Structures are given as C-alpha cells and as structure tokens.
Image (cartoon, rainbow, N blue to C red; front, side, top):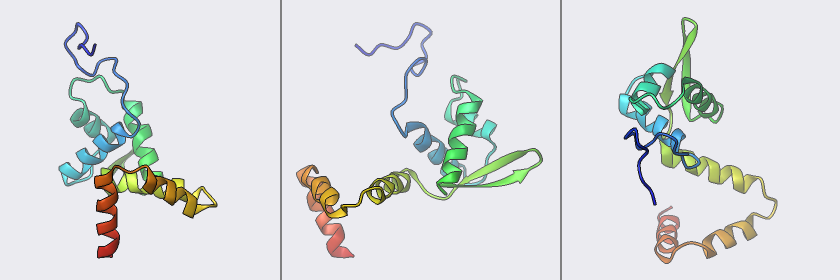
Amino acid sequence: MNEDPPDGSPDQGRRRRPGELEAAILATLRDAGRSLTPGQVRELVDPEGGLSYSAVVTTLVRLHRRKAVARRREGRAYRYGALTDAAGLVAQRMSALLDAEDDRATVLRRFVGELHPGDEELLRRLLADE
C-alpha cells in the first residue's frame, strides 16, 4: 500500500531511489540554463521544503567531484551549473563499475546477457552506428 502521509506531502518520509536526487538536481540545473546556488537548487527541487540544505550541498559536491557539474566561487558560497545530464551520469557510473573489474569481457558478456531483448537490439544498433 503506497499512501501519502497524513500531512498530504507525497515525498515526506519517502526514501529516494539511488541516484534520484542527483538526477533531479542535474535536471534542475540544466533547466535553469544558468548557475545556481545550493539554496536556489533546493527551492526548485523541493519547494515544499522537505529536502535539507545539507543534502543538496553534499550532492552538489559529489557531482562536482565526478565532473558532472561546474562550480564557481561567489562570495562565501558556490554557484553550480550542469556539465552533463542524468543519462550521462548513469553512463559515468557504468564506466566506473566496468573500470573496477579486471575481466571486462566477462562483465560485458554478462551485462549483455541480462539485457531485455529490446535493449539488446538497441545496443547492437548503436554499436553498428559507431
């Protein structure tokens, strides 16, 4: 049963899926078309105020370390801008996981073996286009 909490806010108390906050922040930065402060990001991602400022800052710092966002100093704070999108972030994660393994061929073989048939065909077409 997936009911909203009594206060009516659907996100209150809900745990985000891994990468969900990162994707939301990247989308917000891309949609803004300009650099934003963490406070501005927080207000746009969660106008109801259920998201903590520190969660936004922590996520932005992680994204910056992974070169998914740029930042520049403004006074005592930073402004952040997107360098990639959510799909690019997932691709970076996939590459990092693959880089962590010595036997790339086995990892790729198993990955392809677990794809849905439509995804496997899409991957074949993408490889053929390269």
